[in-house]
Length: 377
Ligand SMILES: Cc1cc2nc3c(=O)[nH]c(=O)nc-3n(C[C@H](O)[C@H](O)[C@H](O)COP(=O)(O)OP(=O)(O)OC[C@H]3O[C@@H](n4cnc5c(N)ncnc54)[C@H](O)[C@@H]3O)c2cc1C
Image 1: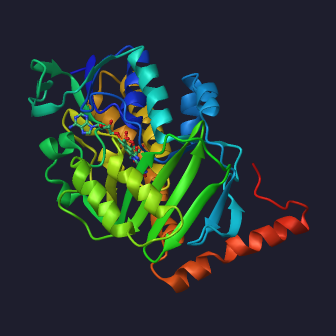
Image 2: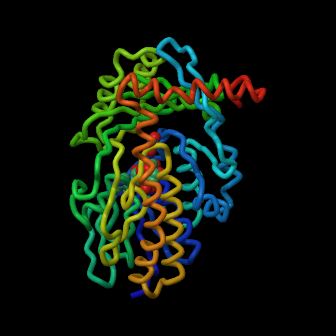
Image 3: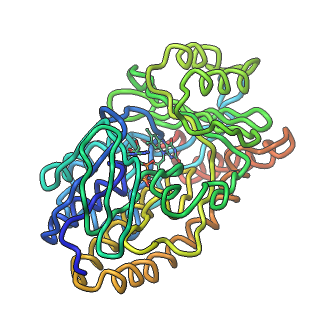
């Protein structure tokens, strides 16, 4: 009944963290990742709270800090580029803000040093016979594992195969997010944020380049799986046409982008994260997308799951219960923050934006009274 070999579906934030730790606990680990290569898109995310000791124990704190973003403040701009005001963005020294793609790359390299990683493939069917799971793949030959972990993100295929259709578990929170790297040197050390009712666009300075993020209110779509790049591009172009500031130039880049990430901002909730010998981690289990909180939650959840499996490999059912008990408390807190974050980031009306802008106008006044005249950084 014990767990000696594990399949992890998805080499994202959760999957790579999990694979690294499972392998360190001496469990034979295989990762299967659908993408042929590392994706370059994704807005910056924070590594903070319970995720920090995890990456520290992986000896990754230094590379994460070296790849950290340059931004120390958030500046609101109007449609002609005039600065409305700014607020400090990095209030805690106990957090590392890093582009999602850099974080994913650093974790993936750490995982591949210890685990087998197969790119360009995906699970096709799963059959759990109580003693293990027979797995077929789109490309590779069938294999048997003691345990299968779905770390395959918001639209998890493992979850669909083992738990049911995603419509039972996902709640669309009224927003979509699209991000892309701009491949041009960052001119500012502040995040620039421009709003129109129901739409926000931010340009974020990262090491050596900028990342653009579009967050906008839109109803759910049946095809928000981020798989049809051309439809995603059109969705963003339609939502932002007519906006000022740098938006026309950014939309032109959307048209020609080779890696636009676009998905609905959704919450995933399941009564249980495991069925027999199949278990979920990260967004597949408990998505809290938007503002990057999901990455720290995913890292912490993956480390907890690996620890429980590593220390209770002979009692997998108990290990999975203990993982869920410990991690659910963190998830509840993170999921509650999303509604407030979305109201602050994407006010639905002009009046709402004016109210939201009050701290942006006030902070420079307070800062200059304390002798700080410009956004730090
Ligand atoms: C390219 C990209 C950009 C992102 N950008 C943002 C962003 O800007 N803002 C935001 O809030 N969140 C973003 N996210 C989501 C964010 O990374 C997660 O919310 C969070 O980090 C939790 O991580 P996760 O590992 O659970 O999921 P993810 O980071 O989404 O990783 C899931 C992994 O599973 C892989 N996968 C999916 N389906 C299959 C399959 N059938 N078989 C095998 N592998 C599969 C994916 O390619 C991906 O590598 C992005 C995700 C990706 C993949």
